[in-house]
Image (cartoon, rainbow, N blue to C red; front, side):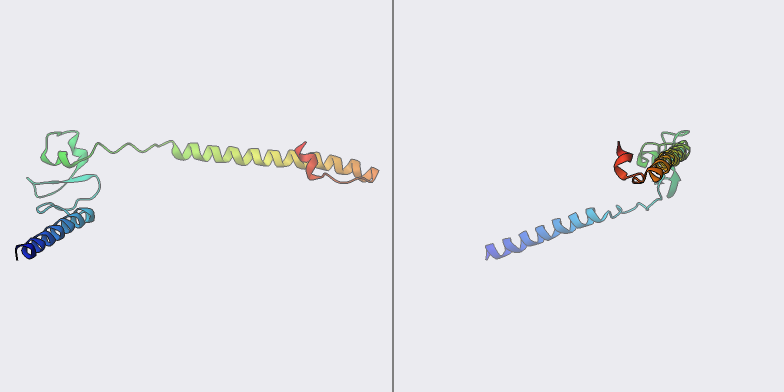
Length: 126
């Protein structure tokens, strides 16, 4: 009889631990807190979400503890650098294509007069 009740107790304990694990994995909020958008944190004093940017002026506010480190400033030069690199690649590709075309064109004129081949692919590699 004691074994049966011990098994039930063990099953309830395992079930409780399983439910607690599922609840933590699901990311449920603790009671009394409200979900706030990114960059804001819940203020228990004001009962609303507050912007974390105001923590710079008032770092000891109650909601500042829920704010992570200040979000990194956006890298403003990303698009100009990326655009410049892509433009440079495009211009170098056009220049290389033009030089290869010009070289093959000269060889074609010479080989047409002598009856040889055009500009073979092997000649481009050499």
